[in-house]
Length: 166
Length: 462
Image (cartoon, rainbow over all chains, first blue to last red; front, top):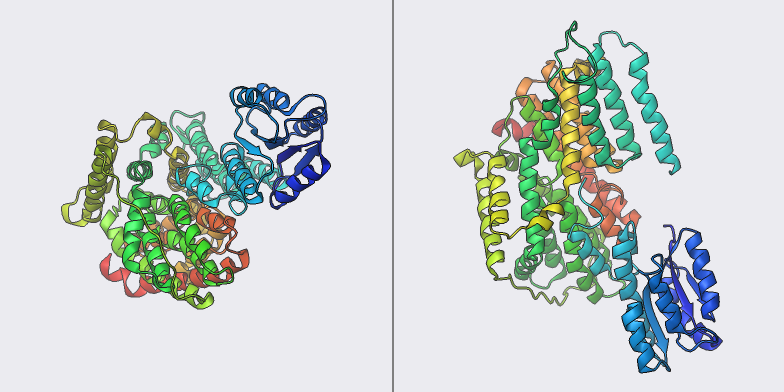
């Protein structure tokens, strides 16, 4: 299967970045993971992924970053039609109420994960969000049944999505 | 565009062009045009150069402009009397299409009110918690539902039922594979039981109708349902032996209660009444396509089924079937089908061998192609064998039609053979090689049984 849907992880502390990527490594076979340690670098990577005709399904983003902060990046992605549909998650220990509210209101934040996180919790969130993403955006969500929420994808097909008898 | 699609595009255009430039002796001008359309459709359907339903639309389009009395070709001095263009576009409202429309409305309304899901849970309860009987229960329920709903939607729904069951089984238990395989197999097999079970049935029944042979809903069930039941039990035994359950008992949690809202109850009553009238057609004689208007009328006038639901019906499947019906009409009317079968000395084959050939070809083709496409390509040839007297008239026509439709549904060797197979493999619980082994056994036994029925059963009830 063509791997068109990317996961973007933005985190400035190398150990934390490693640990996030390690926790969600099981998805990499279907969803290539790209890493960045600043919002600026993330922008460049996102640009090049989009220019290749691929899409960003999910972004896991720290808030406190050198330079532009995470919420800034998410709001900006929300405003760009090419990344508006990307599922956006904050992983942070330090986002204040005001910034979090902004992320919810202006970036349609899908989840707020407080550090330190549980691996199972993170995997579950990534699985749910990617499932929703492929159901709405992938040409054939069928191919993701084994790795994502198979029941939910099957139910989507039951409701007439994607394939019928022929 | 992928290489195979591109190859299909080139071949399709060549196929279309050949009869325009080459004159085949014994074939009329209209027959040449019909051949162009046939070759184009066959190639496009096989290579899926364009979606299979758009090939069907293209068939109707070319028939209207090349073969109808309102088209661009002047047939006034020729033997071929062109049909009015309305005959070609009327395939979209063929009684069998209306029958399917009624089925689609019932099925989609059931999904809307979770009737399919809750019914499944209720029906599964009597099967207890022994692995082998759970599997039998799953197969029976799948088959019954897929006899009235789409095989694909039934499979998808049943997958949501079995995934939690499989998750509760030991990781190394072979029966996990068995259970994941039993669903698509049962859905494919269940589809043969009624005329609306699966689209190839529609193409065949419409072709027979065009010959003046009415196949009642109940008659089809008399022909095909016994086969479905036997094959279901056989498939169950095959899967039990190939994937012996390691655990005897699976704890089941089947909570589900039928919804009791006004709309849901209207649906249950309409569903029950429609199915009852369908299966008793032989007694009261009201045609199944007319009965099919009941759910369409009742469910829309009560707002159980609304505008948005109508928009979401699988209209492309109806186009696909209509194209198949239309292709048959032009092949028959222009004499193309007769010309094609006339080039082979069929009389040397013998009746049973002939059925076996069509059955085997249908089985092989539909493992790689859409089942509907397989039926659409084969049925015009089969019908003209009967009209040209090679096999015995109306009776032979029904026989060979049944053989084609039923054999096409027994193709379940590969993930690409049918959408239910594709779904099962996508769950990750089934390897393609498992599907090949058991699918091959079921396909071959199914074909043998079909031929057996053609000798010892159908002749006595048709």
